Image (cartoon, rainbow, N blue to C red):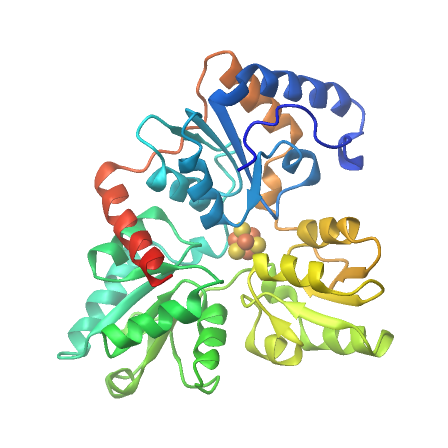
Length: 369
Ligand code: SF4
């Protein structure tokens, strides 16, 4: 693990060259050097260039949470990502570590599609309507710590976009049906990987008071019940964009994230998690072209990392994830300088019982591997 390189590993990105940014860049690196191995900085792939440059480790949310916990020489875990990721890092952290998020307002639209009160209500209605049927709750990594604790308590597990298929298989072997939240699209795409038709999973609409808009009979027959939630970045991709990309370049490879709607995944050449997309871009031969349906910051970095390939975003005018982008150089500078001065700011702390149950759900996911 590359912890604490503690020197600018790359040139200041173009986005940080605006007036005043240069000083911030120097100040942030000075604070980072002062913190030394006492801190580990974790950066999610969707973060801006000017902050990801500070990351000792880059990766997806689960990998980062584990790498933070493994960096035992660090007492401070600075998470460049969104709130649910920092919570997951706090669930897995070592006892002497503290997790901080440079902007506590960095949420996730998808994670916020499901809250503990609405999910508990749905669960109570569903289980009452299905006597004798064992439903296993599964939550996507992109969910609050309280939801991870809830599935831990109810015998369920967490999954990532990389292991959702395995988690669904496990849940269906443990029970009669799986209740997956909060991403309807990842859920449907996973069900299709298991051989189901796109229309087979039922969709529980939390806005509808009675059984999420479903009948008791339909629920009794269902194998997969999906929460009606979505990521506003990945649902910005369309089949038409794929058709236009192919019209412009018939040889282009289309790779999308499984948080995209089913028709987009069907029209693409392949779909997979963020780590899968990164690996596939590495594997493409020189001269190949690919359009990618995921966050723009990541696609832009892949384009720069592979100048011998033509890599672009499926929708070049798409806004990067706005919540991921809340962490910028001024906020990171403030956070690092505060930490270096001994003031531990923006702590993300999950309560102990929630940590215990959330860990149970994460451990069940790990056991699937
Ligand atoms: S890209 Fe989507 S799932 Fe990822 S943090 Fe942004 S809103 Fe959440």
